[in-house]
Image (tube, rainbow, N blue to C red; front, side, top):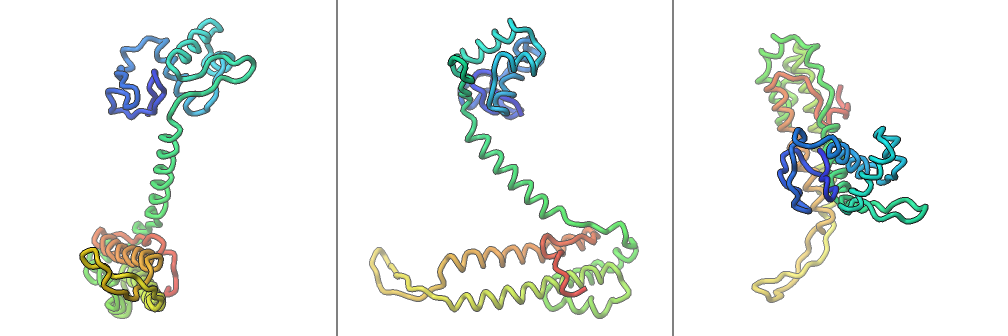
Length: 249
């Protein structure tokens, strides 16, 4: 990730032109030392949101004369505003929105990775135990069938791990179903429209209940599928969130 030397827009490595100002993105190997230094200063400004001649000297170890030339180019390209007495120069790089959107995307990605990156204890399991019991362990994530491996294959550490996790998932499914049914009793009147004409009203569960409950149901289904995937991969790996629930041990 780097920045356009003309307008300061954040760029990706594959860009050939700046999407904001259209400036051609030069190969770093073709740039002069001054160009490279200038780009570094632009990147610094985009990150720190501040700059001055003395700061350029201090951060990049250049002479006062070169720092002035860099500042002049920054002002010429609209990266910073003109000198305003003793006040700091205004930072004009118009990438705050992009930075915020990227920061949000990065945070979401990091949170998802944290959720998915659960404890994996596969190394502590016997490979023969894993290979011999994959099919039976798969039953652990098929609802009530989870009780079959839990009670039948008590001598398999691998099966026991997944059966226990599957039963805990089943309990969560049961709680979810109960809550969903109770909340489903909450109804509001809505207008029925047919071909643009109101034909009556009916009672429905409000979307602020049905939508989040539907999402939770989908996530539980995904957890069940993920459990089967882990079994097929021969992994003793916790399910995201559900793996932390230890109702049955």
